Image (tube, rainbow, N blue to C red; front, top):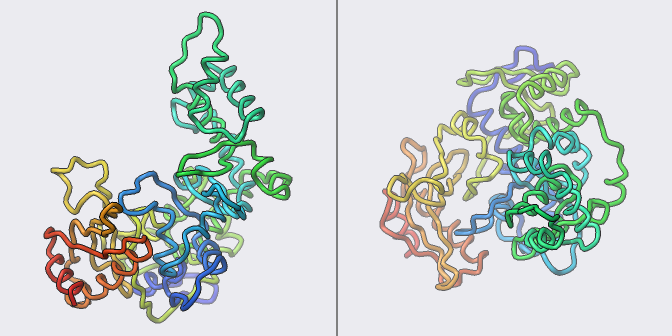
Length: 415
């Protein structure tokens, strides 16, 4: 174990894995009875960030990390906290490029302003080009938001045509790119999502006044705070692990981690089998065992940094959405299955909403796991039934033939 002051501390690989699982909320039992916003907030305080993704073949990815940790919960509760509804909201998270496109507690907005200020250098190429070559278009789109916000991205097309100057030719997409530049630079933000489509408005009309009025911290102060959030969410981590959580530039991540170590806020440790220095969050829980059971979204913060996933769990994971179908190894939308302290299987899932069925397109056991295949199949069957019910797929779970775990899983579901 790590020493009291962290100097020369050592952790076994198993202890580090349990610390990492506990930091992400997997050492706690799932709540019994009614689940409400308090349970969601507890998860959000731990993970600090939810990644967004447009793929909806199984479930919108930002819903899954909460289910993975607390089980079935009313999704409309998260919709109200994130303003992903046309109904009443209680905004506690806002949208920004934090990891990738992400939902982040509103209190962290001031600590991301340094990234907004770097939009001219850091935003994707198309956005930079629009800002540099057509600054008047950016200003016109911003004026459109001031006048008519919240607006959809498609609303900028009409604005382009109406505001086109003599002799200028605009691609229909240019206004949308300008809007995305404004979003990156923090001049507009997401007021709502309706049917997962963003509505853009001015930050002062969206965020709480106390957040908008918070003085902007220095870059160094902001990055240290983001690394504190990351360190709490990791428990124990390497510097690249910590920096990747909010996608900090590597040189700045190294400098800020060194400053937190110097201040005693991170404790250097050596972890068995890790080939890089590690850092322990002093208040990290150190459970003796973890009895988790969870399906993990490909974009879950426990596994989204693939080098860390392989280092901690011995689990090599690559999402194959963009791989041609004939070259996929495990399937299109594959979720790892966590049982106890191990990633023991992976399943390719599809929600057939018209038929009301959760389809298991493939099921694969990991080699050399401690749990017996029959137990893995039984626990996975129980979790699949639970997630199918949560998603409103009333006809349950059906298993296709692909994968070495498929026969046992089919039998477990029949039982």
